[in-house]
Length: 137
Image (cartoon, rainbow, N blue to C red; front, side):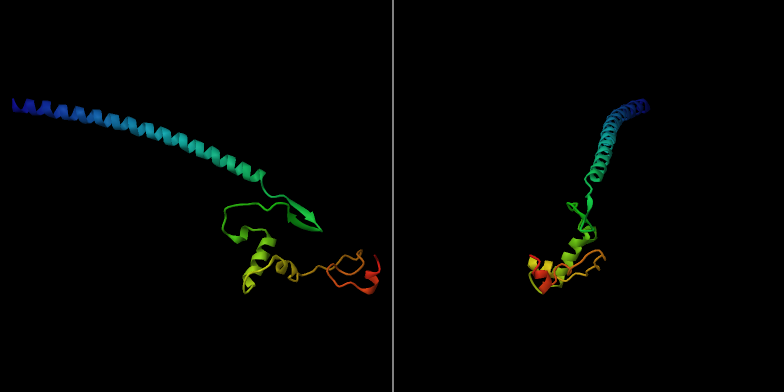
């Protein structure tokens, strides 16, 4: 008789364990389904962000024969290599200074000038006026 009681008790324990495991399995499957949905949503959002980033990319135009950005593209990147060239030049000027730098000092820093095209006449911009050029007005 003891064996039958032990078997009945053990079956009861296993039935309770099976019910508990079935409940846990349902909870796990529900969580997996939610995670799959979250993954799809994140993928769609990432695609939208990539599409928006392409649509908002900075536009380059020519000003005085030089390509410039109308509005620099803004990002959270901390790397200065992602900055436009003019911004990197400003950073270099500020780093070379001993203390605070005024905007005027950045603008007055000598730049490498390109030779003027042959069709241009007169002194290069920024050069001191000459006697012939001062009488033009």
